[in-house]
Length: 251
Image (cartoon, rainbow, N blue to C red; front, side, top):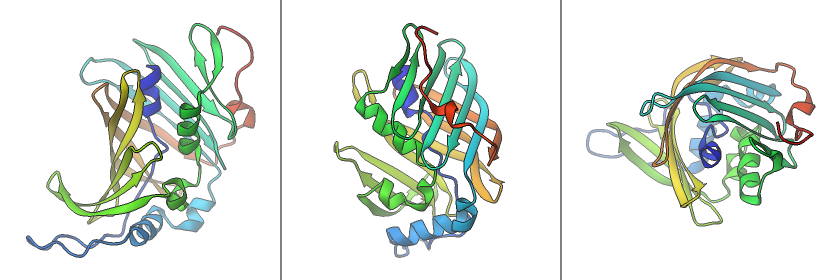
């Protein structure tokens, strides 16, 4: 479960209303540039002003594994500019809890209590914790480039790709008609090396003027999960202490 959690629930990129150029018959329209994709993305979210008004995000729901029948709960708390706490409790495996106060990162070891995250895990959670990442994706993904338009699942898709310093790539898939971010292929580290998790975003709803995905389907060689959020709230009060490393030894 330790390695799985790093791939679960990336900081969710919610999405889109306006369309991109789409395929016309067998002829592909000229693909939009990275800037065009991102500009439309921000507008589709609700615009810069709507996003900037948000200071906290609370998400609660269920998680299930269709392959094994495992079930559990998910809670995510975020606070601007870069604080995050995620609690994933898969009943058959136990609770995985990890967070960052924006500087340090930690997780709760079920046997030994709170521990500091290693450098790679810390980098990952800091990326996830970036509250306004939707407004600065070119900073979050400094090597972002366009792979053009493709057909995925019978639909025209605009694909953006980001090359990471370790050589791995993350791909963002935008529906060319709606503009919604419908998939994110993200690399993650396992005990046996690197792998990729495919995150599919569904059931978009408006929450306080910003689009959010209420269903996320995650598939990788290591796991298969469906996350369904029943509650997503913005600007609910969250104390800074919630993101601090717990004190004490074994929980």
